[in-house]
Image 1: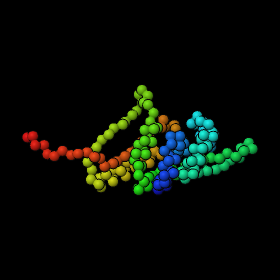
Image 2 (image 1 turned 135 degrees about the horizontal axis):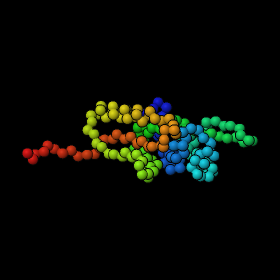
Image 3 (image 1 turned 135 degrees about the vertical axis):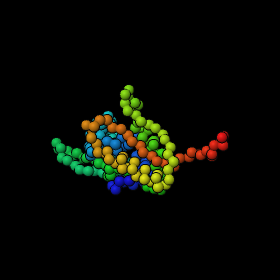
Image 4 (image 1 turned 180 degrees about the horizontal axis):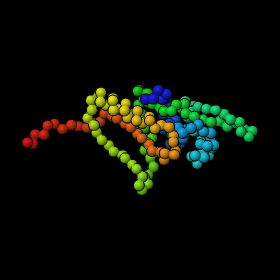
Length: 175
């Protein structure tokens, strides 16, 4: 967990993040603060619809008003995330499932020649090794949090190190 991560713990926060439009808004606001007009254009949705979803995110404490600017006789409001990242409270139930569902919801179909590396592996680790590996994975994932569109297209990274329910075989007695 990064120092400035917001710790998610309330049902309102989970409900706010659980809606696909709000999940997409959060991903857009990870890039930079934006106005309702900019967010609506990015999503291809009506400004009023986007305004409703931003309000839900604000009421859940996930989005804040970052600044206002005077433009042609009106006021433009810029919205930003309250934190660069979100982490689940240790007692919050369903955090892993929530993240897996979110990743599945944002996955695009592969285009020909596009890189895709989905694998499932099982490792046998001591508790100390599992903690060390989890820390290294978090560190690697944190390195590329800044948005640099010149580098290419966005890819999702879901890192999950979990205790697995895998029965173990006894010794091979065939020999």
